[in-house]
Image: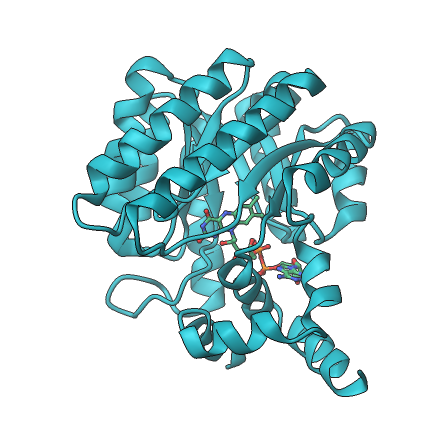
Length: 307
Ligand code: FDA
């Protein structure tokens, strides 16, 4: 019940100002956001690497309003890549990108986002790694998939994300599995209506399993983005059934969620990548994490009351 309300608030400027300015927010935010600057996030990447974990780094932000903000976001990723080069982790440290941060929703946004993301993908390739395009709300996806296809002509390792809650996703999964893409499958974190998406948790989980099967049986590289123990077990079973080796797919989880499970899977020999978000514009990302688990909201509310 609370999830949709929080997701609606994630798009409210008034709530953004209120929540972002509250000093008590900070400790709660820090559970999910690995710092504000690239200097904050580099030690986190090293710490995760020491635990046998890989990372996908996300400079938080979305829904910008000017082209200047989009080029500033591009430059933030380019600075991040300069720092990653020094760590020498190669593909163990990749980037995740939200195309709305690169200007996708502005007038002429498709071309602007492509122009901004291309140099990031080029720079990532230069240091032996790659970029995955996050999936945002359903109105952005045709443009995201077209940009993904365009980038893959020169950089076939470029990945993208698909969301199990959307009706369209089984067809997208078939196309991407056949053309050998790196694909992250997630349940989906945005507020979508019943005209485009399953609303019921059990229906979403069933769709996830159908899509997972398509990806695991396909030609690409599946990236299983979930903390759900049942889906993790089903992935392992499917991998055995279709003969995928441990490095033919990977698990992905979010920074701050089920850390022990991340380490446990890595110790079993699985590739585990931790989606690690950092930066100052954390509001939208943070609110989606609250919406996923109402207990997070209670923790947040309690910290507001006890301060
Ligand atoms: P589910 O929500 O059922 O959670 C299973 C269990 O995990 C819970 O019982 C709880 O223990 C734990 N858990 C999950 N979320 C938690 C939270 N916020 N706080 C505390 N515990 C939590 N979405 C999207 O629309 N576009 C995208 O590009 C991405 N990218 C992405 C990358 C990666 C690596 C991950 C893991 C997830 C995403 N997502 C996403 C988010 C995704 O759509 C989904 O909202 C979350 O992963 C939560 O769903 P689960 O599959 O974890 O299952």
